[in-house]
Length: 443
Image (tube, rainbow, N blue to C red):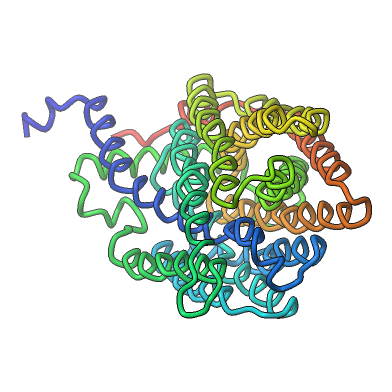
């Protein structure tokens, strides 16, 4: 008893946070690498697939983007299921189903088959990302959450850094009379099925169920999260319906739509942009397109750290979005100089990585429970429709004008609109400050 009393609360806090981070974050990191690679590998496959199947840029853009319609339909229910039921079971279901559909992409032959499988892939993956964001709120306090999101989302640049050269090598395969781009889909879809099964046994839904935490660690994190929940309930007791009508929720949704438009418009067409600018081989193109994601990774970590250190979220989100727009505008000016154009894509990637950690800390700044889960689902589902609009508009404008300039300009304007929406958010006190005045029962 005396030994327990001698343990400093600060020591318990540090030990619990370290153990939770070490147990959960590396695994979620791997899951998101798999998810993001299966979502965007169509960009690398396009280097050969569009020629093999005689797809125009418009057909490819529509197929790449239609993923997000399926995603939109099932996003909000999936987020609520994570909050109300079981994160690990739902995430496992998502991964197994999307892994099978990712493999099926390797067997499409017509544009309608392409559209259908991409739509179903989006429906299968719906709920994964917002589900993870909700899941992190079950394990990390508000003041640690931007850093946790940043650690999780470093998987995005890593998936490109790792996936780009792997995709480049797979494109050269000619096994069993199947083109390399088909093997790219087949091989990269398998890990989702394997890790989906592992997830059921590895993840733990809530701290109360975590046998791998010491008793004092479990009590500390459970108490901290309960205090945060009480503070939000005392000051912001919004229902799901009211949350959907909230001005700041609508601004967050619009901002995410515009920035995702820029993100996926660039992501899906970047290999094609680089191919046209440089005339390099497929392998060299995939290596070059990995370069911007080094800057993406660095910006994500630095801005996430700065946002948590200062507690400021709004401008840590808006300014990087402005940088995206600036980088895309300057890439147009540098279009005749391949090296300079790639440098400007690197600048845009700084913004795309930088806005993410603080952005996803914004909804949980003033909402909790089912309202927060549903809001994250709303923001992510409606926002991800920008993942359809961006590639489709870029492909359409390229067909109409014979140039990508109009499409890139559209993506730049979208990024600036996203920054404007974030700048218009209301200032709010930090949850860490809100937790302090909550009264506790006298004992």
